[in-house]
Image (cartoon, rainbow, N blue to C red; front, side, top):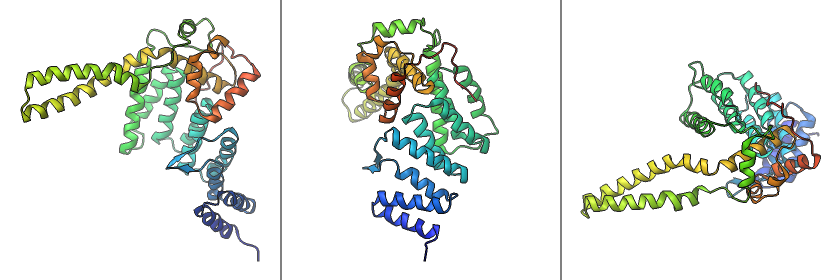
Length: 325
């Protein structure tokens, strides 16, 4: 007697629990062949096409794995449009792993059409627009995000809302005098990048030990001299040092961003290439230590896509614009 889709689905769950991902994937495909609208099976196909968790963290999928997972996720939201996990996973694949930021905007806009007052889609869209330098559009969506009609956010969502607003404010402030436009070959930022092409970005840890920590240490010594070595003084010194560390770290973030401005500009140019599918970075910069250091932190799938884009050699038109919903 032939098994029903639900019976095969139970086999999928059993195989996955036993760690037999290969056969679980085959059985999940059998489920959707029998019942195309089985959203849970499509979700399993998406999940099983991606690398498994290792010590609680996922391995980085390659381009083929991302493509297969995205195809399955589109089926999930077609048959189960309220599946938040599918929306979040699809957004992460499009934006973080594939660098397809315009598609990411569209992905989250489709979610907004079904849930117009949900916070997460707007937060994700604002993050994309800030990366691309579209600060006016960020401001419009920030007004929407903090509008009274939006759903009441949970604590974690509220933190993300505040975080994305601060990110936009800091980025806009850093580029207050000049917003880098990778489409423009004559943009002055290109010349700065060429001059600093062999200067890698300063990491937060390095900046912490070479700049922030010495200042806190010197101020801590002054505080200790002032308060003495009593038990109460020691506690006061400890608390003051913690306060100084947090304050100086926060104040010095803008300095770190300014020091790394050339790397942040190049990162935006990479985003323009991965999003548009066309190249704009000069060969002189692409062959530099700066470019190599930026590519070291990119995901395998994004590196594969960028290699294909570079091989195609199609230039980014000066009038190209991000399609902002």
